[in-house]
Length: 165
Image (tube, rainbow, N blue to C red; front, top):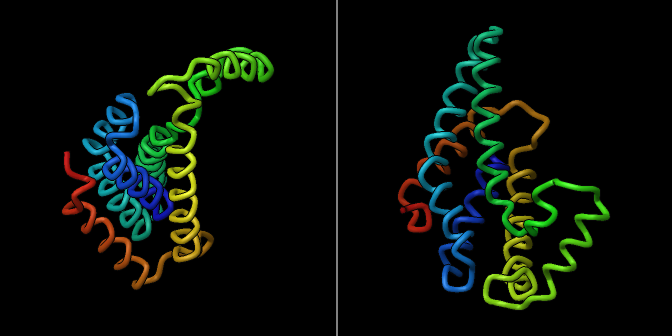
């Protein structure tokens, strides 16, 4: 969840700062993510704590469902993937050919024109995710300090300008 929060936060921050440079589709994705991400992270955190206290099958199922919602939100911020390959239709070769064909048209919203913008986004998200992964020590169960750090981070996003609609 720490890594997911870092990825979403980086994306929203990037979109907020570069709103004039990103296409309307990216702005729409950011607005949709802003509207549901805080609730999804808070719910997943509550269910994670409940599961930590009582490792019942019911709590596990609820936690896995909440984590799936968080994962879906993270999936939405992967907007730098070209539509041709993001759709998953056709073979890998057909997708690459379709992507190459679509790159021939250069416009404000085209993939070619937006490569520098999305390279910046990918670089920023990569750095933030690696910092979060290192800080969270993904294979270890959270201690009290990690619990407090995540709760503070979750609380902080509620007042951050780039998280406000």
